[in-house]
Length: 435
Image (cartoon, rainbow, N blue to C red; front, side):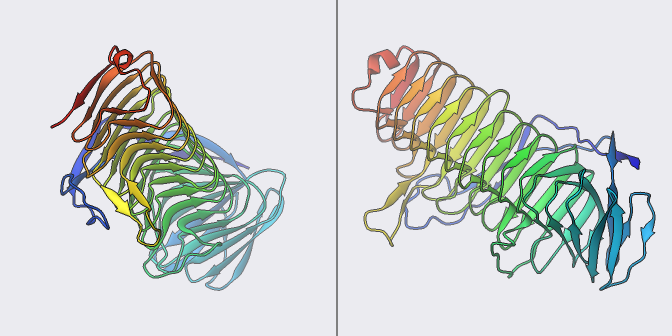
């Protein structure tokens, strides 16, 4: 049976707003940057409406203190009581749902078509756990889930999970629970997460990460706001893909991190604020690429923190990027002679700038603008870099054959690259050194 649903689409206002916030005190460093850092944020706007059709529906409605209500694809309530096991027919298959207080556990067997769960209502002491081995459509339709004991949503399913946002939704964990391999975040999925739909989702990670996917993470539409994360804001084992939508994050760990692979931003808007030592705005174990009409604003205040940290190559082909770092040098007392300086961009591989607009302001002691272990090339785009230490430091070769901009260093060199043709670089970039 098909059911037409009315979902909410937000009007995404294309401007950023700032509010004052004090950073953590630097650890093992001597920051000379500002004593406070402004949080960046994109406004999500108010909700509109859109029509959508879905098949094979199971509705789960939380009732704010009473047992959740379960309805089948025909809209009929399935009778249950706290602690009961109920059977729901979907896709001609039987889905088992166990309700214990306000905790809901779903076991969805393999089926010919996708299961679709529509989750609504409010609970301040409940959770949703989904087991199974089949693709799932998860519709968050004006739901508010707080689980003081662990994840609000825990998906133990290695398949792709399509998350549709409708209306205003919120998820939160509590303080004091211990994450492990089966529960790593307030919103945790063993499989990949694909966010779409036009609604809003707020996720608070009070004890760990806010959102974790053990597969890849993708956002195509909607607005995700993470006002607090004890660790990372969004963490994925595989590639993180931002094609559209809006992401706002305040975190103690990395705002966005791909643990094993790459980060690809080709659209949408990202506003990230990190507070911890060596906590980066965007971090990838592989390569990082930014292109098209992406808008990125990053504020990092911890010593040793980077706006963008790529352990392989990085390419900027388009978009607008604004990075502010206020941390200084971090010294790791557990490792002899191990230090890490704050920087707007740090890549272990090569950096290529082919288009877009890049602004970096690094104000902390010994903080750099761009720090590249490989080679750097610029053939287009516009850059504006102000750093306390080197404006651009490149271990390999630096070639500039196009583009424009300014590179300034307060205390060191605008360009630190042995063998670089400075006179040729000055044809494209204005270099400034000293106070």
